[in-house]
Each structure stands twice: as structure tokens, then as C-alpha cells.
Amino acid sequence: MPAPILHLGIENAVKETFAIHQAVGVFTTEVHLHSCHQLLYAERGVLHFFTRERQFILPARHAAWIPVNLSHKVESRSPSLHLRTIYVREGEAELNFPEQLTVFPLTDLAREMIIYTERWPHVNPLSKAEDAFFIAVSYLISDWCRNAISLVLPTTEHLLLRKVIGHLITNLDNDLTTASVSGEFGVSSRTMMRLFRNHLDMTFQEYLRTARVIAALELLTSPDVSITETAQQVGYQSMSSFSRTFKAYVGKSPSVFRNETRSLEA
Image (cartoon, rainbow, N blue to C red; front, side, top):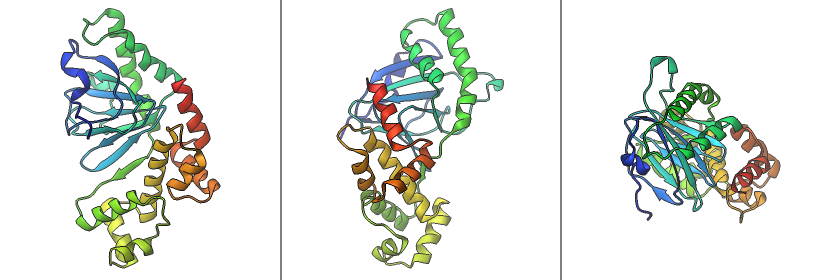
């Protein structure tokens, strides 16, 4: 079990708005919160976020906005993951920061602006140029977040449904249907469908498709797993069906996503 990382160096900062860039690899945090907002960009891997109600995923070429005082846990299963984090002071009302955890695709400009902050160590005093740059980033955040993606899995305290979800996640490569899973847990298909709608606000199939795309995103960051193998490992025998579903959720095909991920590692 990897050792917890708490706050990723924030305790050494000497200014209100600052950036921390570090290679972190595989890690997990305890549930925690921050007294400032966070803008996170993960390179060379996939980052998972957990709140009390939901699980989010941060794929390549995407960023996440975590609002102030939101309790969350962060986890990486990617050995080469490099994390770039901008901690943002609360700011004025006109900045209109999102109030919810939001995952969104990065434009090339947004990505370069985040990387640019690496030149300013977080332990140094705030310079005028740095302050002006961070103000510009702060004003752009609400625009960047408008293109949020929906790769989110809700969680539940319902004991039976938690067991069902665990079964789905560990058997994504199998032919999972409402009927087969219902039979596995001794309930009717109608009861299973009602549990998903009432407690997760999703259908059984919506949850399963989302879980499969999330698993595929992580597999596609590995150079040792082909796109065909990825499709099979997340339960798709048809490449066209896999590509169509993946593009509907991520906005790009598996091959484009993989090529973009590799271009970041070059």
C-alpha cells in the first residue's frame, strides 16, 4: 500500500496563490480539504478523485477544479504520473469560480499556462509578474470549466448495491447484463434496475458503460496494452462499439486519446 501524501507540499508555501509541480507516481491521500481552491493537471497517467458522493477521473489532457473546503481523496495508480497543481486564493465574486468539483479538457493554451508556472517556486516570495499571471489564470478558470466532461461514478451507502458495484468493477471483462448480475445477487432484474435509479440516479447500463470507459482510459496510458486488448479487458468484443462509446464520453477516439497521451510523454 503506497504511503499517504498530504497536501503535496502546500505546508511550505509562503504565498496565497502558487503552483507545485512534482513527479508523484503511485500514491493515495487521506480524505482532506484545502483552505484554497485547486486546479490540477496530471501528466503521464490518470488521477482518481473521491468525494463522499462520487468518483471522478482525470484523464490525459484534462484538468480538475477542486473548490475550497471540499473533502476529497486523491489516488494515482500510474507509476509515471507527474502532477501540476495551482492553489488559487478564493478571489472576488466576479471571478465566478465553479462551486463543484469539475473535470474538463485542456486547450493547448491552458496547458501551456499551467506548465509556465513551474518557473516560480512556491517557497519564493510572490513577484509582480507572477501575481499578474495568476490573476489572468484565475479569470480564465470559469471559461475552461464550461466544457466539463461527465466521467463520474456516483457512490452509495446501500449495502447490497455497494456489493453489486464491486462485482461490476472487478468483472468488467465479462458479459455483464442486468439479468445475470441480478441472478448473482438473488434479486429480480426489476429490483436491480430500481436500485440503480433510486440510489445512483443512473441506469444499470449507464453505470456499466461509464465504469468501462474509466477503466479504458487508465489502460490506454500503458504502452504495453494495445487498443484491442483494452477493449477486450473492459468487456467489448466489438472495436466499433468500443470506439463509439469511448468517443461519446471522452470526445475523441481511443487512438486519438492514446496518441495525445504519448505526445505528452515524448
